[in-house]
Length: 163
Image (cartoon, rainbow, N blue to C red; front, side):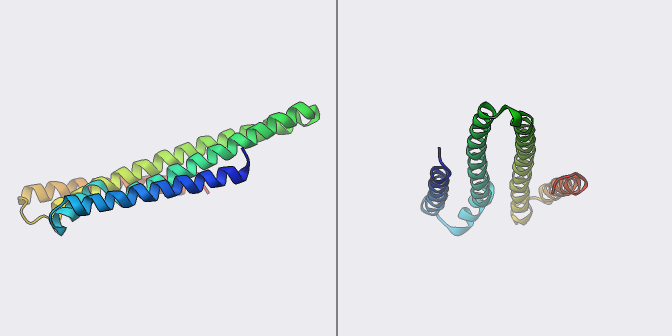
């Protein structure tokens, strides 16, 4: 697979994600009777979070395709030139470490996106005038805990060796 072929697949994947995202907006608009219901429905699912998650997933697939090509080239290089075996092994280990780090970052991003979606839900609970005061207070407490969790995750990133 050539780099150009991988780029065209990434573009097609991105276009497909955007089309699906746009269709979800159209469906929400046509299936719900008024704007307040649409807003509540949209807050529940976080369509923007889905879009960003889709782009992150597309980027991950693109990276995997590129790494697969790189691994194929490394194998050819090892076969043709045994003197370079040590270098190729080191490059492959670094590639594996980078992939492991990327998986960690993707997992962290998904976790933060999920927390953000739940915070949006609690925001809708707090701003809903028909909710009881007890429900609103519980939502505020749970929202604050999630925000603190996100702050802790971000602090952990600043303390780690992630650049």
